[in-house]
Image 1 (cartoon, rainbow, N blue to C red):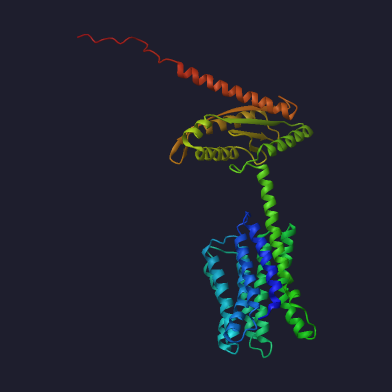
Image 2: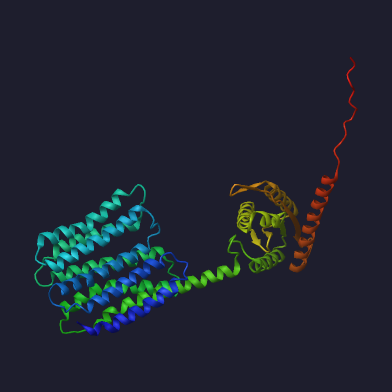
Length: 438
């Protein structure tokens, strides 16, 4: 056994453990596929320890050593597919696993079986092209056509070079691995925004990983006396793994920033982000001489919903209200949840009191309508306070106070109206009933 591979194995396991710890908290759905890919890379290094074993054990170790590296590449590509739940995507992944494993097994066990190798080489292009053509009506992607074309070119290359005396098998293996990791590079470019450090490092690592399988045959052919340690060729693996860890960390930071400025249930801006946007809106209105309207909306009977139907129904009410308010405003406006049952709307772009009144009436009319939630009929209603800058106030704090005062005045008016309606007796008939004469 080759114990010199233990440092590489230890380094990959340590990085994979760090990756697993970070991916457990990650919001990225690709993290599990990435982690499974690194488990395959760890299996690749583990099997390399047993390569010198004689007989069948050595052959098995060689198959696992090569196949696990191809499995990792297929998983990394699958992680970059935008619609992985589609059935054809699963067929593409299964085809990648099967064809690579079959070809490697034939090449290791029967390297002189030219007909079997030729048949397996043809499967590279035919299998992926068949899945691509069969699913073109339901899933048509330029990346999938590129991958099918790449594997067809790989089939041609294998048919030409794999039976070449001397280094034919070596060139075939390197061509397969180059195609897989070039595909990883192309898929990663299209699935990630290459505007962060982690994404750039990962892309550079995938590209270097693919080029290893071009440079290694060139060095062996043209510079046979030049000996490079295995650690040099393994360096791109560590670069990719570190890059992926950075991608997960960057995504976690962005998610934490989002949670710090948004309400998790309704996905609306919270009070902190609302105040920042209101300050910017007022400053913009001062520069342009326009108006900004602030609407403060307080839900009626929301506490009764929570007390009688439960907080889960109350959460659904908040989500429904958030959707209604978002639909009734423009993209340039801001809808925020600024309290337990309180929402705020900032109307920008030369908004007027007439616009505010129109939006207020529309919102109140929609919120007065009953909701159907989990088989329950929920009716809440709302009170709205309107303040216009700079007509009602010239500062942000005083504008918010004015909207708050008007909202509570509207709520009190509605309470008084309901109280009067409940106390009003039934109206008597206009004339007394006259008994018919017989």
